[in-house]
Structure formats: C-alpha cells, structure tokens
Length: 318
Image 1: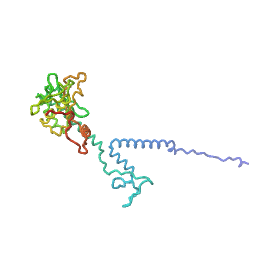
Image 2 (image 1 turned 30 degrees about the horizontal axis):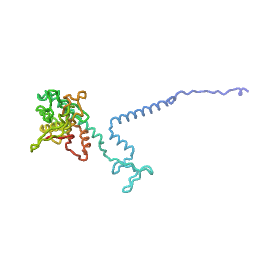
Image 3 (image 1 turned 90 degrees about the horizontal axis):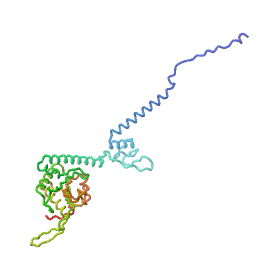
Image 4 (image 1 turned 90 degrees about the vertical axis):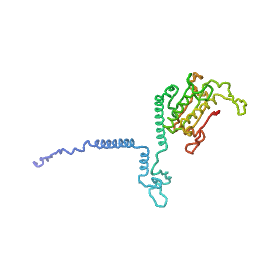
C-alpha cells in the first residue's frame, strides 16, 4: 500500500532562446519594397537620360530578346533557317515590319534643328541692322522711318514715309536719293549675313491715284492714256526698290517675290491717308516662309520647284 501511494515526480523545464524568427516577416516585405523602389527610380533615371532613338532601341530589344538579326534589323523569327523561310513568333500572326539597324534621325527633329539655326541667324541680322543704323550717319537720320521686327515669316524691315520726307516723288515710282542710299546699305548687310530669300511689298495710302490713268507718248508722237491706280503704283514702287537692292549687291535669285498691295493693308487704319501708310516692306524670309512661297506658287523645294521672282499686280512702266 505504501508503494501505491507514491506519486510520480514530473519535472518541467522551460528552454529559452530561438526567438530570432519571431516578428521577422515584416523585414522581408520591407526589403522587397525598398528593392522595388530602387528599381523604379533607376527606371525613371534611365528614361530621363535617354533620347527617343535610344528608347526605341531598348523597346526593340524587349520585343526581340533573342537578339537574332535579319537583313533589315531585328528578326521576329525564333529560329533562323538559313535560306528557308523564318518561323514567325506566334502561330498564325503576321511578322512585324522590321526597322533598320541604324535608325536615322527623324525628319521632324532635323527640321527643328534647322528652324532654330535659321531663327538665330535672323536674330543676329536684326542686331546688326540696328547697330548699322546707329553707327551710320546716312542711316541714323532716318531711323524713325526704319521699322524692324521679327514676324512669323521672318525679319521685316519697313521703310515708311513721313509728311516732309517721302521715299518717292508724289504719284511716282521714282526713288528719292536718300531712299536709294538706304536700300543699297540694307542690301549689303543682308547679303553678307544671310542667304535667305526676300519678299518686297509696296504699299500706298488710301488717296486715289490722280485721274485714274497716266498719259504717255509712243515713239511716233501719239498721245495715249493707260488706266493706272494705287495697285499699279505700289507694284512699280516695289520693283523700283528691287532694282535698287540689286545695285547694292544683292543677287537676283535672292529675291523671291515682288508684290504691290495698294492701300489694302494699311499701317494706320485709323487714318487711311496717313503718310506712314506709304511704305516699302522687305521681309527676309525664314525657311518655312520660303517653303510656303514655293508651294503656293506651284513648286516645291523637294521636287526642284520654281525659283523665279513672283510679281503680283505688277504693271511696270520700265
């Protein structure tokens, strides 16, 4: 009975330690998040330092990671079978058109570069013309009649009349001596600085041409009358300016257009008879304006279109 009363002795031991794995799952998730963010910012950085052509090349590589090259660039074939046909990727799908290995600079990018270069040239010409007007005794006296500005078509130089200092004799296309000096000096500066073609436009005020006709005598002594208006007068004055520019050294093929607009485009609309409306406008055209001129007159710079001067409303008496 004594033995039956003996109870077994149970000893419990608590082993401490090994808690390294408790609460560690968040660290793994955080490490993955940091890695993903590094990869994301690295991607943004690479996109920022590469241009369009390089990005297209990277895109092509991902489209064709095997690196197999065909005669026109990256091949869409998984297996190149010598002289046999390629087996395209994807059953029943047409193979994509291949790009050449050396991708040329896009035409629009070339045009942007040329436009920027042309703009800089015209800006420099504007600066030199202003400096020439200030430094020349002959031009400085007329600086209030010389208006210079950059327009969407190029650099525009306007020579305007003043009440007591007209460019032409009244109702005539005969240039005043000082106007000839101005035009010849302008021709020398423009020709030396830029190859751009120019457009010459004659303008009158709204005062009608006296009588509406001119009288002339033929070689036999017979008197005749010919209808004549501000349209003819403005065109004749534009042509007179053209001839003076040529005498100043401007090549004939640098003149792209000669136009007479009469009083249809007034400088001072509030006072149609203001002398300032009588003017000669010379535009040193930018490349886009030159191209527009060729296309509008039936030619194109790309297909060797016409390069002759264009005259509108031109009825010269010379």
